[in-house]
Length: 319
View 1: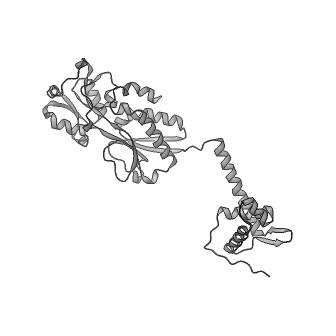
View 2: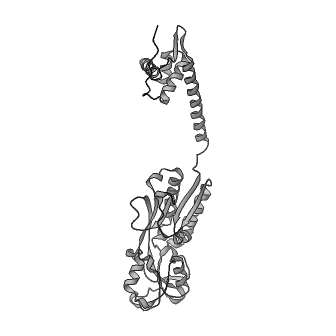
């Protein structure tokens, strides 16, 4: 009489173990099971012994008519059959339709990027991914992605946090603008002639921006007649004729009421970043949005980087 196999609780079963047991039960012979699995007869014999040792039970009775599953073996065969059916059903679903990410995606950015650049990108994304909902968080303070304040941050910065990873689709150009009716000619005025004009500027809380520091160094404080804490308000002030000032080109170049008074200064530019936490980068909806937004913003790169033809091509890029 053959003793029962001894249990080896340290051994875990793999899907291939279930496939092997099911093949033996289906074929009732080791050589036929080996052929079905594409392995050697000796391998089937050895692995069957290892599986039985691991479980501590006999899975087959050896009869002259072939291998007959024991109650334990039959239960394992039934489980293997259910898993096999589920795998085939999943494969059929993949073949019939793409599995699309779903759920909520929290994105932190500021009103400047949102109104003049990102809203059309968000609209395109939602039209293509209707199962995803966007929750947009507006503010100039960096969101804490480690604490899940947001899943993605879209920021203009040359120094993104070292704790985040991301992609850089463009570099945001800044240039000097005035009201179009005040500067009707095609010739750019000499910059030196502009220092005595009235200026508008962002407030001291924006000293991280190169444009704000540049203006503070070159323009007398009494010439800055209007300060505020929003770039959108800055554009409105320049268009209203309060003064001249620096703006991102993707804002200034698309407003007919504004005239660019100088070519973009590379020293004033800032990188545009799509950022996320390393732990979130493989989340399907995060990865899908990052890929989509990078492509959409890359198509807008001429506008963002101050190419004068970029504004004319914006609508084409967003179609």
